[in-house]
Length: 96
Image (cartoon, rainbow, N blue to C red; front, side):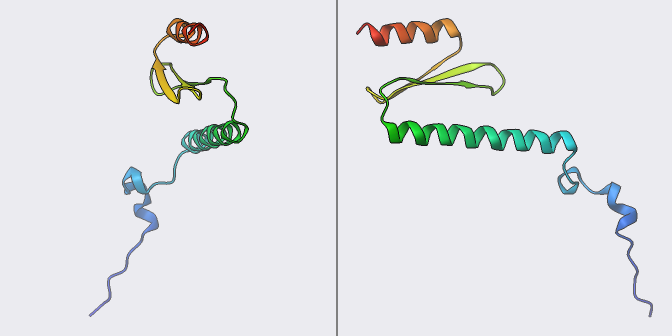
């Protein structure tokens, strides 16, 4: 009885997408996402160590452009869909 032979290389193009190595653009996107995540975490760490009373504002880029603001004095976060809403929130915060 003859043992079956397999040629894995000839079937590499038939593998599902999940097992294919990521494309160059996908690798670049993954690296950018990782760097953005690392930058956000380092900014949070620094601000938590300095105890700054200034509001922390970040742009979120998940589909639509949005903003997240955190007030360390009241320990509340708010999300905004427009820059105008964010500006109004900042003005109200200072005129309380």
